[in-house]
Image (tube, rainbow, N blue to C red; front, side):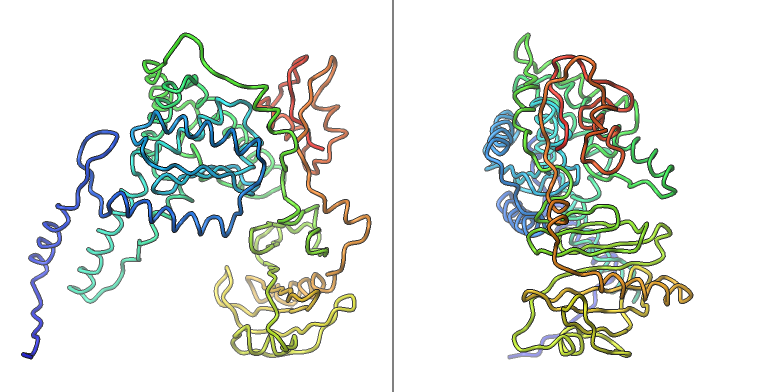
Length: 491
């Protein structure tokens, strides 16, 4: 076999070669009929959606409620049947997350959180959310972004090979990133236009899209007001409709333009029937996720409670609990892992956690539960820092706490906080089991003289109950219940 010889093409020729090859990777856009630059077939798109869908469901399991699942499937399938890609096998899933969001994956995989459902007030508003996400699918936004990202990646490699400078980050996860950050202003407006069209063709009023944006903008205004009151930064919303400024003229234009597709003189709203399906919906943290109340965390299924430092803000994520002080200059994290057979807490820390520069190791106990603690260098949100680790064995699982500080002068104090938090781990008392019970939506009819102030006095919502009840019923900031109309309260 003759030897293979490699020749380095001049950069300009190489770029031209790649450009010619990529120009062939075009497909007809199902919406516009124009050629779009994409690097995957429809079948590849569906397979990519399946892959991402499995990853999403691993982090956020489906929320099981037959009545809600039925209406989401029915409305979603009807909208899809009037879309530019009616032959796709669309999958609509409610996920068990308290976040307020919805998102679409390639190939027709569409998700809506139970947190989003809690704030909708009609079937038409549900259709607006699902129609917008179907628009992302029909226009192949995630596919187009990933194809563009792949070209950027290829050209980045060429630049690195030609100059010896590797300064271009990998963008191969662009489709996944788009789920979190949105698709950009133009793609979002296109999804709005398409969603409004699908609403009108399905018998819904396209103005429902304006109503949903109003719901989300009210939440944004509420968080800004509370952040100012609490001396913190607002939680910036990056999800559904997040690119729209207040009084968005272009958005209103695309919604109004969809009126030409209306199928009749009447439009479907479906308010009361939709609200009745929300009765019993989990509101806020679920028992499966664990419940946050002030600086305490309760988990009913795992039967434990944990107390974080006073005034620290707790974030309950799918796979961990994270707490941080107001200044965000420290962090304590809790995760739970399986215990390898025959491994002691000390061996777990020393051999299975793969820590660097382990020191100051000693046995640790928390309310009769055995554990081990040590200090090691670790990767943190502040860079490489000294981290206090505590592992506690209970009921066949390893409870792992890790705490650190941004600066060395806070390290000693936050180290003590981590140890104190670990020491507080205990089984739920009878009183705490009630606190670990999730809240539910309750649908009632407003009676004469009923106010949100009076409802708030009896509400189990811990923070700003009056404001949150108004948000749930789309009457923020100063609306009041209307006689005989259905209302969402929390029990």
